[in-house]
Image (cartoon, rainbow, N blue to C red; front, side):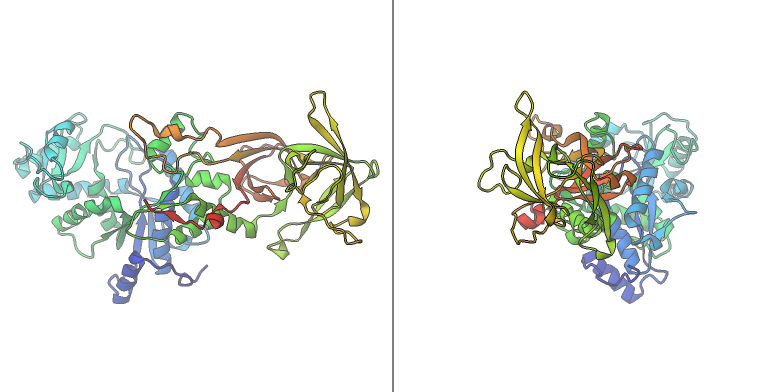
Length: 574
C-alpha cells in the first residue's frame, strides 16, 4: 500500500490535481483537508469525503489536515471531537495515515484561529466591506429576498466603518445580548446568488466553547471561517459537496477582499453520497439517538462509521466501497447492497470460520459410544491456506439448526429428515431414526445414527449425500447471545416523507432480533471485542463490546447471501 500510484482512482477532481502537479502550481505540495463540524458522529457519506481528501493527498505525496470546523459552540461537544478523531484514524489506518495533517498530534481546530479571524474581520470593516447590522434574525431573512426577487438593503448598511468598528469591538467585549447585532459583508443585495446578499460574518453567542472556553462571545459564521482557515493552513484544494457550490463566490470574495498574498485555496465540489435504506441527515440521526429508536450513535444499524465499525465492517471494505462508487458531479443513489458486497468480499478473505447454531435442536447419536469424545480438524479459512486448522470437539450429543430438519420433507428439501443421510461438516454421515416430542408436540430431540467409516465427510463405498449441515458439540458448546440486524428503514428513501408523514414511519420494527441462547464452538470463548468470524452457512458476525467474561455477544455483520451480485445493481438513479 505504500505505492499510492498503483491502482490510482480516476475522477475529475484528481484530473485537476494531476494537472496542477504537472504544472508545479503548488511548489510546497498538495494540501487537502477534511473539516467536519463536531456536532454529531461521522456517517458513510463522510467516509466518501475522507477517502477522497486523504486519497488525493496520499497519491500526490501531500498532506490532508483533519480540522474541526467548530464555529457554533451551541451544538458542538468534545464527545463528537473524540468520535470524529477516532473514526478518521480507524478508517485510514495503514492506508493514508502517513499524510494525515495534525497539530501537535491532535486535529486542527478553526477555533484556534479565532484571534486571526477577528483581525481579518476588522480589516474588512476598515475597507468598508463589512458593517454591523442591528436587524433581527427574522428581518435579516426577510430582507434577503428570494432567488427570483432582489433583496432589500438593511437600514444599517450605510454605517460608517468607524461606527461599525466600534460596535464590533463592543460585541467582542460582551456588551450586547445574543441576537442584538451581527457583522455582515457589504456586497450586493440584488445579486442573483442569495449568498452574496450581505451575508452574515459574525454573530453574538454567549456560550462556552468546547475548545476555546469562555474567551469569546462572538463567533464567525461557517462561510467566513472556512475559507480563511483553509488559507491559514495552506490548503491548495478545498474539496466539498455540491450544496456548497453556491457558496464558492463568497469563498472567493472574502479572500480577494482581504488582499491576501497568493496562492489562495480554491474550492471544488462533487456529488455527495446518497444510499438506499439509509438516512444521512445528522439532525435526524441525532433525533433517532435522542428518541431512543436506536441504542446510540454507534448502534450497528446506524450508518455512522462507528456503528459500522461496531457491526464488524472492515475499514478496507469501506475504502473499497468509496473507490467503487467514484467521484462525479451528478447526484445519484447507491444501492446499499454494493456496500454489503464490499464487506462480504473483504471478510470472505480474512474472517476465520467457526460453527454456531442459532436455533438449536438436540441430536443424540445412539450408536456413538457413551462417554466418548474426539476432536476433528476444522478449516479456519479455505481462502487462506496459511490460516491452518482448529480442533472441533465432537461427541454423542450435538446441536443442529432446527430449520435443518423436517419431519415431513418436500421434494426440494435435502437436509435431515427421517431415514435420510446428511453430512455433518468436518465429521460423519448422519441419519435420523426417530423424533422425540414434548406434550405440545414440539420436537425436542432427534435420535440418529452415524457411520464411523465416513469420518471427514466421505464414504468409502462411494455413496453420496445431497446436503452438508453444521453443528456444535452439546457438551462443549459455548452459550452466546447473537443480535441479528436488518435494515433500519423499510423505505429505499426514508427521507422522502409524504404530506403529513414522518421519516420515522419507515423505521423497520424487525431491524433487530436478539437470539439469547445460541450455541457456538468453544474456540470462540477466547474471542475479543471487534473480532469478526464467519459462522458457517449463516453469515459474518462480530464480537460486540457488550460482551463479558464467559458471555459473548455477537452482531451479525452481513449475511452470506450476495444481493449485489444477484441483482447486478450498483446504483439507482434518482
